[in-house]
Image 1 (cartoon, helix red, strand yellow):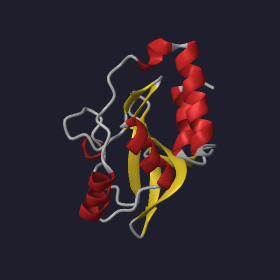
Image 2: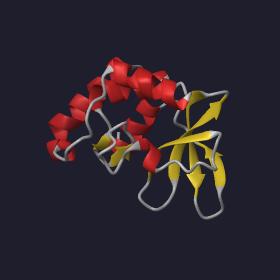
Image 3: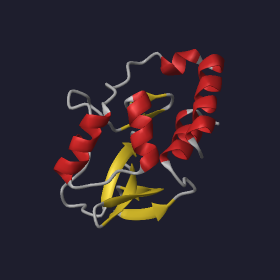
Image 4: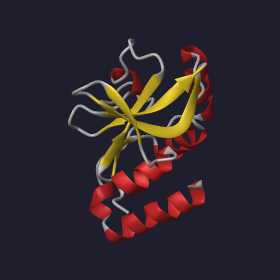
Length: 142
């Protein structure tokens, strides 16, 4: 999904169900902060995830939440990423102990979203080719 289509879906959801967007979102990082974050943690974030954070900040988003760079938030990305999982970067949860994540290979995050089941510690492929599709389907219920 491209970012313009995503913004149109968000605007449609805001018009239809404005209450979904009344919860406070996390602070929006600057490009400088995003570059510093990636450099410090030696990771390259997926382009669409970075674009989302630079425009919306993360945290509560419709029916979903998405992890952010806001160190003062419950949704700060490294509050939810155990050090033992080196090939995954958790980017959201379902509120039941399971996570949505990006695969990380050589410090580069893939755009595709995987589902991490906490009960049996398995990782499953999803139909979400990127974070924007995840947010439209889960966060906006579209």
